[in-house]
Length: 399
Image 1 (cartoon, rainbow, N blue to C red):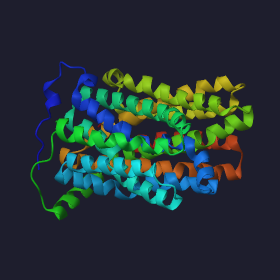
Image 2 (image 1 turned 60 degrees about the horizontal axis):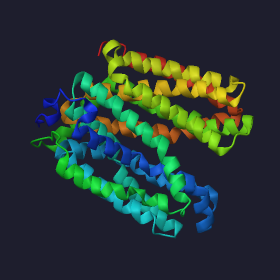
Image 3 (image 1 turned 135 degrees about the vertical axis):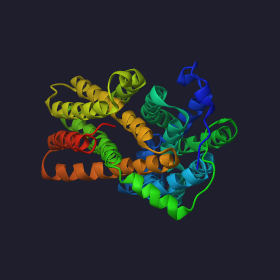
């Protein structure tokens, strides 16, 4: 199996962000992060409109994210064997059609089934958008592209709740129609994306055996652990319990909580946009280690802040850590992965950060149950320090 070189390698005179290939990849990434953050603002209104118990609203997120855990490695294997476009294009169409259909149903059970289908469409998008960067770019340009892509993803994550909330003023179902943009994007990917695709075929049993050998690499496993840890800290301590602390301690209005939450995304955007420059001065492993030091620092000072706006200090520190760590993990995975297994390895990594998204709130809820809201953040400090040393153990040799 071999890969022809992509056209972007011939355009080194162009900044990465000006290349059409990269712009299409960013559009795929923006669609990939659309499915949850754009609709959560309408959940209270939806519960009233459909007369359902608010406790059931979490199912709208669970059924959407579940396919990523189940199908992640399978998608990677298919993309490595049959090509990226053959997976991405149908996935975009399924995401767009099922997602748009959610806006036209008024039965909660049917809505859940459509969200499940939409989640199946979403499952390959994020990991394969990162795979495309690994396919097309090399060296510093790859790291720069990873950083820019993380910036774009953060902008989407930060702005979608505002967009969804604005559309919700017209009706709870309008934000669910946003995925319609994935349908024309599918045509753009099919006709305009110029990327190297795997050529040739091999025995499936041989492929899986060799892929299993590659995945036994201890350095890859260390990166998988770091990737999952990022999302355990983000979704466990920050997304789930940080708003609760703000409400309990400072009685803040939802708009103020939203500003504080968005400040992390702003810090991620600025930091990750400079990742190419930082990567020329520091090894990726050092940047990842630094991210866990910053997570620990941010979380340890959260309970100590004397007034609400002082919380911008830990949120900024946390965002800098995320902007350094997450795209550096993706870039290092792409560097370590043999080209013929790139989609498989990045999809397995996608399964790990999906696992982190799922485990984070659960683990921190257990901590909260035994202590107080502050104990969640102190547990996060201990976890970040633990992962710092675990990551060093798995990646201590030169990469």
